[in-house]
Length: 394
Ligand SMILES: *Cc1c(COP(=O)(O)O)cnc(C)c1O
Image 1 (spheres, protein in one colour):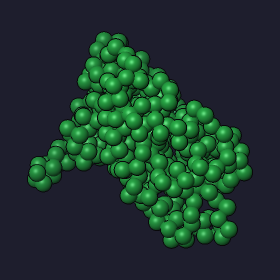
Image 2 (image 1 turned 135 degrees about the horizontal axis):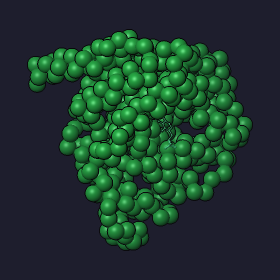
Image 3 (image 1 turned 120 degrees about the horizontal axis):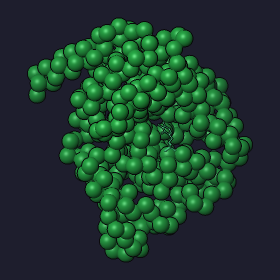
């Protein structure tokens, strides 16, 4: 069945709203001319509050992985040690990338069902008396599992043992959907991407950089050219870029920022929590398990759902796609085939999510996955309860 819109319910890329599609659909312009300069300044300034920062934010024409690499090559030297936490597949990929640059990674093991363990970070840093660890690198929203880690707790752990390592945070799937506090966290490098909470197509990545990270970039020795922060920041000061920027995506970014500010960031974050609570209520209603096992860190952005033993999540996704024209996120890495993920980020509201949950309940039946019938009803009840509370507090 292919009539009507496809339901893109994966946790990024998230659907691009009409307004942003219209904003992007423009003729290209001279990227060294005055019209571009105005757009450049608007984009570079406008993104800062979303990162909770007054520091420079670099915009690359690249996917999030580009900003990951830039964070490493601008701050570290071959042989440096870094401390990372295995929250899931994205943390694993970032550590693989660091290792390929000759960086030694201490990778704190995790079970892919919890957020970053700040106490374990503190213990490792306390042992590192000679300060050989140059950076602590963590993923804020682990998109492969649906756990949103407490970054303030990581900073507190670093401060408790007065460790001077840089704090680098991946907010690729949380920016624009959950509070990101580059300055408030005391983060040194915060990286993100365009195609998740910012509701843009893939193709832009972002990096907020602290003065301490910039200082590190003046003495580190990993080579870089395209990713060089210093050159970028020098051009950005005048609203320009050292090479051809993705100007049409920057029009889209300008519109996305207007949309986020119209709704109000606090309201955007509350909407994501509201959607996530209903999604988890549905999962409980089906008698299935949410992958994130710590209720304090369940993600407002996506929900990972564990299949009952012996049932293949990829077969379930295939049945749902064929019958209802809906895409869910696949289980990645260690949880491939065991998990599917429902994204509820960006341009998503109660009825989009309800439609997705209806498709889920019907597909569980069609795929022969044992479950209870009450998931959709539980999600509706969650919405009405939550709305009553919202109205009472308004
Ligand atoms: C999507 C994502 C990435 C990878 O970003 P690309 O744009 O695919 O390079 C990295 N980290 C997290 C947490 C993500 O969600």
